[in-house]
Structure formats: structure tokens, C-alpha cells
Image 1 (cartoon, rainbow, N blue to C red):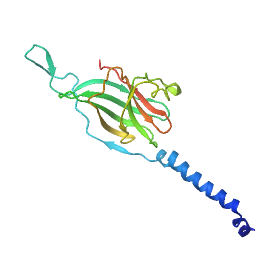
Image 2 (cartoon, helix red, strand yellow):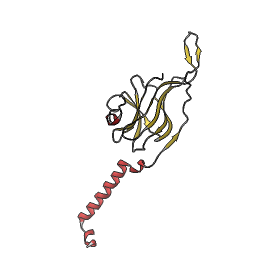
Image 3 (cartoon, one colour):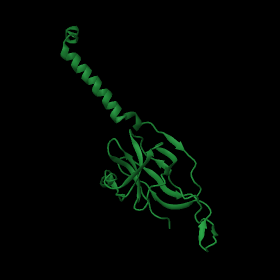
Image 4 (tube, rainbow, N blue to C red):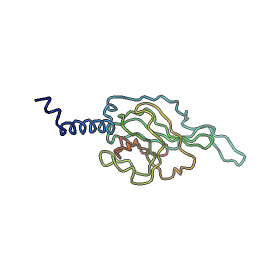
Length: 183
């Protein structure tokens, strides 16, 4: 009975279709990433709570070190996400986004986005970050730990009020943090 079944063309079509479907499903969903972590431990910018000012020739004060521009705590969206995000301006005027103590799930196509969308808790915030203006800073380096991303010089930070760990493949936020000036 088994040998006769293997000689039928329909059997081979079904076997090939199942194999191709399984391979495509594994590529698309990458289920092993749900049980594996990529840990990153990059050096973060040392930011003093109140940078020591120096007097300039015009009487204005300028910070001598890096300045904390904005910061916020991550909220969970599609996957449990915690940690904080901050934008730091270096003395030479460059900007850098730093993710501090990030902990989220790994995923198939995770990106770091600065966006103009407000962070909404729960499922209401899962899919909003591609609705407005956003800037992709690159692939998420790891789903755990400290990491930094240079913000390109031409990016206007005005109105970019949140950061999202965005799954580009499924157009969903794993987690996001509102960015606000420190108090």
C-alpha cells in the first residue's frame, strides 16, 4: 500500500508543497527567535544630571559635556518590553539614541524607529508608528542590554516624540517609549 501511494504524482505534489510551505513559514516567522536572546553591552554616554556650564565670550553658558535632550520608559506592546530610551547631544552637536537596560523578545526583523506618534498603552499602540513621520536608525542590535544608535545629522528631531522597537516584517511595535525633556 505504501509503495503504491509513493508512486502517485499527487502524493509528491503534496509532499513538495508541504516542504516548501514549512520552509517559507520557518523563514517568515523565525520561531527560534522567541526562545533565543541577543545580548548587547555597549558603552553608554556618561551624562551628568546638571552639566557644569562654562562662560562664553558672549555671557551665555554652554555645557562642557554631553547633554540629556529627552528620555522615557518603555511600555509593552506586542511583546513584554522594559528599559528606557534617551537622546543625548554630544559637545560637538551630534545626537545619539541610547537604549538602557532594554529587555524585549527577539524577532524576525526588528528596527529602531524615532517617530512622531504618541505612545499608547496596550493593543491601541501596536500599529500606529508607521502612520506618521518616522526615522529608522537601524536594525535592533540585540533584544537585551545597553546599545546606542547615531542619529544622522540631517534629522530634524522636532516632533519626533517617541522611539519604537518596530517589527518591520509584521508592521507591529514590540514596545515603545515616549521621549520628553528631563525635569
